[in-house]
Length: 183
Image (cartoon, rainbow, N blue to C red):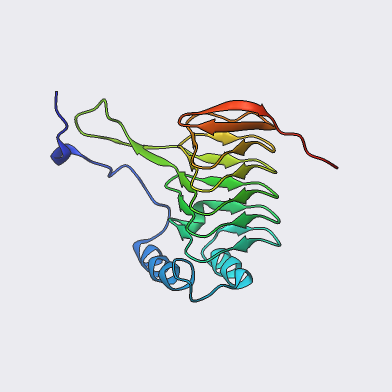
C-alpha cells in the first residue's frame, strides 16, 4: 500500500469563515503579526477581537507570531505569546489565564492519517489550562490538554495530555518531576 496524494480530499473541513474574511486575515496577519513592524500588543489584541478571537486583558503578543484562524482562538487574561510562535489552529485552541507560550512554540491542531493511502486530514482541539508554560521551541500536538500549571520543557513534544503541575521533557514528552510554585 502506498500513499496516493491524488486521492486526498479535505472538502469536509470548514475553516469557519467566508473566503473573503480568510483573505483579509491573511494580509492583516502578514502586516501586524508575522512581521516585526507593529510590536504593540494592545493593537494586536484588538485586531484579533475584530476577527472574532476572544482575548482577555493584559495579553502580550510578541512580533513574528503566526495564527491560522483567530475565530478559533480563545486567550485568557495575562498571557504571553513569544516571538515566532505558531498557532496552527485548524481546530479550536483555548489558552487559559496566565499561560506562557515561549518563543518558537508550535500548537498544531492538524495532522494527517498516515495509515490511509489518501493521507486524510485529522483535526483536534488543543487546551492550555491556567498557568501552563510551553517552553521555547516546544510543540503541542492535536488533541492535547496541558492541565493547570503544567510545564513542557524546551524543544519537547507533547503528544498526550500533561498532568497538572507536571514538568515534562523529551520527544515524546515524559513527566520528569512535579512543579513547585513558591508563594
